[in-house]
Length: 114
Length: 114
Image 1 (cartoon, rainbow over the protein chains, first blue to last red):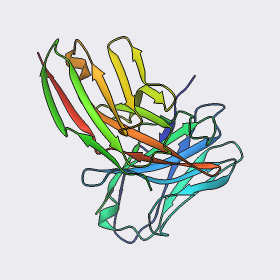
Image 2 (cartoon, chains in turn orange, cyan):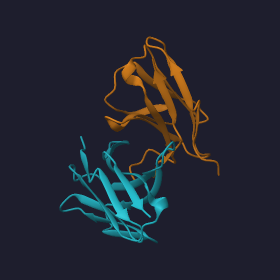
Image 3 (cartoon, each protein chain N blue to C red):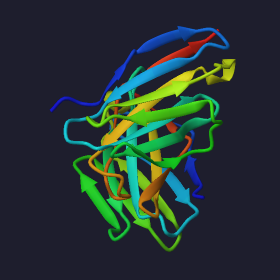
Image 4 (tube, rainbow over the protein chains, first blue to last red):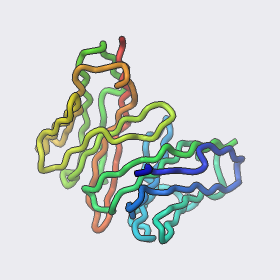
């Protein structure tokens, strides 16, 4: 089975721009979660989608949004980029959003904001 | 919400020695504790996990122990090899209605010296 794929792998943007990141989960997985990873803050939960519905949201400003499509693929959008948004954005998929369900991570999208 | 503390932040061991990484969590309702290994330029990879109804789990050279009373869990790697060098993250999963909250530890940089 193919793993979680994320596109693009690298991205350079300037302050004020917006960006959209894409995640394709493992086949059959219906839950997709997004995380931001930075050296200072570590791995922080952004949001989780299951069956096209946002199930949970972390403590991030409204500039961070996401959606999930009927084929379980997910996109994450960040508007009005700030320098502090530079990070590795990770997507993880699981069969469901149940707490005991294992999450499998993709390779991430590294975003640099100049 | 949940809070996870992970120690140590860095750990160096000689090849063949054992390595132990410890995590504590704050919410006794957390019921699932995965461990991830992250190599440079890659996303976190699940290496072992434990449910709250189990005290210990082993997979070849890797084992995890859980003490629910004390709210701590540990990763044990025996007979370490240079390829074990990576950053290791613990996590605690807290059921939240029909969703879940995932909180990660701050990570441990493990270096295995040949």
